[in-house]
Image 1: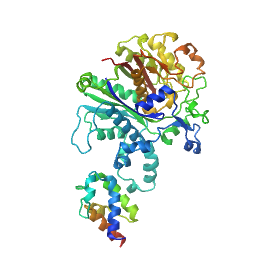
Image 2: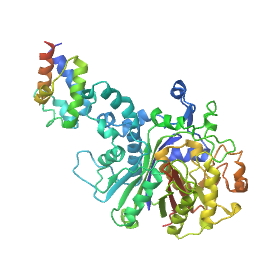
Image 3: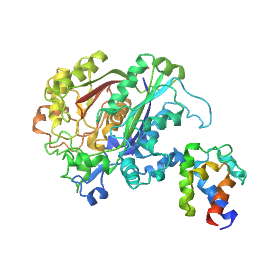
Image 4: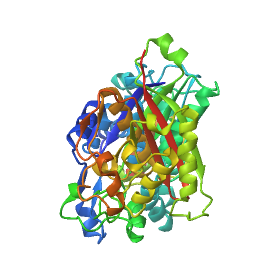
Length: 420
Length: 82
């Protein structure tokens, strides 16, 4: 059961703002002058706004001094999700640990900004003594989940997973399976990613970021478009509170939705897969695995929130969905990409997009996938299924969400609206 | 720089690290940094760096280890500035 949601996205912080932004088709992609000054090809990106102010009401001065944006984003989304679930944040000095609640909060890149801006230059300058006490907790891969554990007094498994762009989705699958195994009552699950130039530079160097829309940021992220020319980097965090039904009912918790199925796999860098491209057979096996666990047939899925980043892979992804669900193009679920509004938040992407999917189920709409009015020619047969403008779908019951990442790794979740 | 001035600056440096903010209301030269103000011992490294930058002094590891109270820090700074 999903009983709590938290989100910090480039186009909105908090459920009301984020749901409103999705509905309105509000883009969170903005011009980034610092990227222009540094000669990036792509000079736009998605960065949550006003975090410097927002974080003051979530974190103490001491905590903030020991946290980079990746950790701050995770903390804000996790506290929001915890509170949204009706759980009470324990006092910092209360010796109470919640042994039944854990967290799997992933990140794709982690604290590379701390390494680049502080650790490496001071170390190379012979100033190790000037590093202070907070380097390790900011650069350890598990820094984001570790901080959340302390903020919320979590006593079950607390860890950070990492599987590139599949990270957020994988975290939710893993947390779901942990609860299903009876090893935890509740898990916070999701992902976070900072917005450093050092994170984005490597992607820019690969020329996988769109550099053709620097003068029109809101049009830059173009999944499924004929003029798609690469993804737009994003950042932020999404966290879900997953909980077993017994616990949710005992607490009288509001239940948004349930996870019917979850699956992860890898394409082994074979059969067309590589470090940077997905093996289509593995993608289809992953989708089939999640749908089979859900006990559904393809035609029972109402909407797909795809990975759909705006690279050459989009038409292949849609083709894989059709094959896995065994549906003709005109019979496919509604297809859309949250990345069209917020860019690709890397390790946070699957989590933020899952929050989007659950809000859609909860409120009965499918948000518009903007910037693909010039649909890619290989997707012409799917035209009627691509959601260009937000649609009210009161009967929306089931959304499938998938992520496919570098390393040829895949994840798929099937969410169903909850009816008491 | 007199003792009161140094004391005020040291308390200001400690403030973000203090986990018992109510203890700041009665802070004195005798106040223990760890026991009374409940500063996380791992953060003493950061407090010392802040003191070095604020007062333009160098603090050795042995000197840092000898600081137990706010007064210890103040006296260490006054001695270094003398």
